[in-house]
Amino acid sequence: MITSPLALATLIAGCTALAFWLDYRFPALGKLGASMMAIIFGAILSNTGLVPVSSPVYDAVLGPVTSVSIAWLLLSVDLRDLARAGWRMTGAFGIAVLGTVLGSFAAAMLYGSRFGDDTWRIAGALTGTYSGGSVNFVAVGREVGLTGTLFAGLNAADAVVTALWLGATIMLPIWLGRFYAPVPAPAPPYVSPFAGGGPATEIDGRGPEPPTPGAGDSSAAERHRHHPYFTREGLSALAIGNLVAAGLILVYASQWLGEAVPYVPSIVWLTLLALALGHSPLFRDARGAMQLGSVGLHFFFVLIGILSRASEIAAVGVDVFFFTLIVVAVHGFVVFGAGKVLRLDIATVSVASQAAVGGPSSALAVAISRDWRHLVLPGVVVGLFGYAVGTFLGLGVAALLR
Image 1 (cartoon, rainbow, N blue to C red):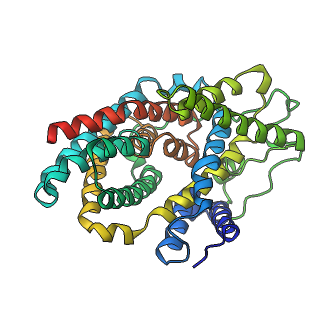
Image 2: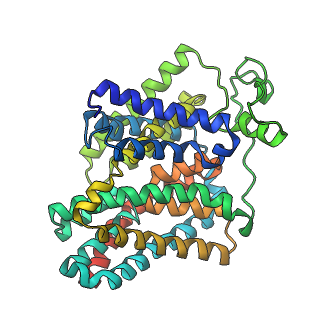
């Protein structure tokens, strides 16, 4: 087993680089997406026993690395994207949360005899986490009194199902997209006002993009020219230093404010501060923020795979996993079914669903992975709203079932 912190960090970085390279090099794997491949690589490492259950490296990725990556991604967001989503994203998220509540009731009815007095506790915790995020899972779980063993097993099942659903919301648009309303056309590529006004292919001053390996048609070339993972950005040491400093300052400030005002989560402060800085005259040129943030966020995806350990689920029984799976399956049926009936585009449905199940970070990941940049901010916004309502919904479902 690999336990060296340096070796674990190298593995996580290597899996991230491999996922990006496979996405870039092979169009067929590009349909799977770098995000899903990163999760798969992490799960393989974990479930084959190559990496440990816990490590300071994991804590670093889950904490400052993910936070600063979110800050970078938010710096590249345009607030005008909110108007492009409007009521559609908000409505889709509401449907997604309703699907979670219905899924919790359905799972409780099927497994009530199996878990007895713990049924309402499990259903409440899962309602919280699949309406907001892991913050709500912990808050509801502690409030309803989940036991240590059951809490750990349910947390592992949550990690596995969340990873599976992240993969589903990345892949379903490819398989089902033709049955839904068209996805709105993406905004034109961003051209910095400081870039000299050259053509989009020469924005970094290095000339046109080289031909993409394996991409012989114009649509593939367009994908690799403007896809946020592959677009070239000409960056100086000064620009990189500014991005790193800005990201770390934003994370530090948001954590300080989160401690000073405990009723407002630090992620909310991080979002507000990053958006304010990104739209201020002090930081208009956030070139490279999207790329740096995407790399850091994929470290997080590798870790999601590593934390998806089948052994921990088996320790408390597979029924815990199936209970969790039913909640998300009903959620998916409701949100994708209603999206079809209401003629919502599948991009909005997928991002809204992931905002409920995985939170704002996962919603952001789906939007970036599929190049739906106009849904980045709306997905984050409804995901943050889920943080606000998830605990109340979880406790409400628990009280009704009790």
